[in-house]
Length: 385
Image 1 (cartoon, rainbow, N blue to C red):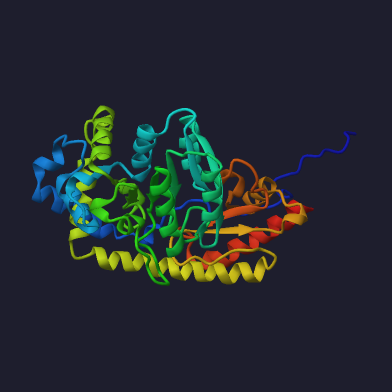
Image 2: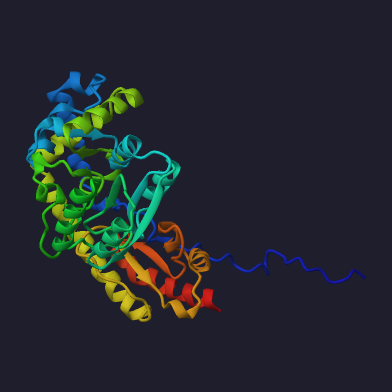
């Protein structure tokens, strides 16, 4: 007589568990339903109809000339202050390559965008992270650093709806940063891809404007159409002093001859056409709804968490009590097991962040927000246990 077997017959096999649909708070990108796909299709056709030679030729490293001209007009600067790039990350990379050498001191916010940290460290920068407060970078700490003898080549600041925190730099701090940049002779890099997706509160002037716009010698400004149109379009730009922009143009020429003319021509048709204003309002309305739902869900399911509801942008920074032994790596793993994706706070810092994480609400459907936070709360409990 044979012994017992651990194998189950098909009749007794348990039914497979249904797959859990992942709710992702990880990626800073809009969901497809809030992108004006039809408008982009029409803009692409219009670009080829209006300028077939421009769309099919190499172009030049300065970018698609009509778009460059439009950007210059938006900022009230001559065209030679503008370089259009393949996304704002490439704009950042060109500026870092121009100014940062091994050992160069650079000031950034703590926390800051992980790709900024990566780019600076890959170039050998001596990175000084300065505390980020709810009204922006701690300017007193910046000043103390400068007066201690640190001489940065640039200070990188994300002034509006900062990534990862969602905080906005106050007007007073904008003025003070400009004063310090002038006094100590460093470039103030205003990295501003989220400025146009404000959905509450009053807009603040750009530091580029406060420094005189066309007369500015202190500020280099970067922006992107990834957040206002769509990330797949990969179009960004730099605004800065003409001599610096021209040196970066040479770098761009040697890198790719010219950026993507089709994408830039499409963007030009879209932003100058009749659909852009409405498309932007659709994005802002959707984000406002989602951040409101996220605020409510966090208060209900994670009452121990600390966060500030942003007035725009894609991101919200959550901090858990430091004295409760939270480990965000473990939380991230437990959350993934429950079908929730987040980005650990440690990704945005050189050290620390074990009790913090970033939530991106831009791609989460409204009906999934509460469920996502409920699962996240369960993951936090499981990680502590």
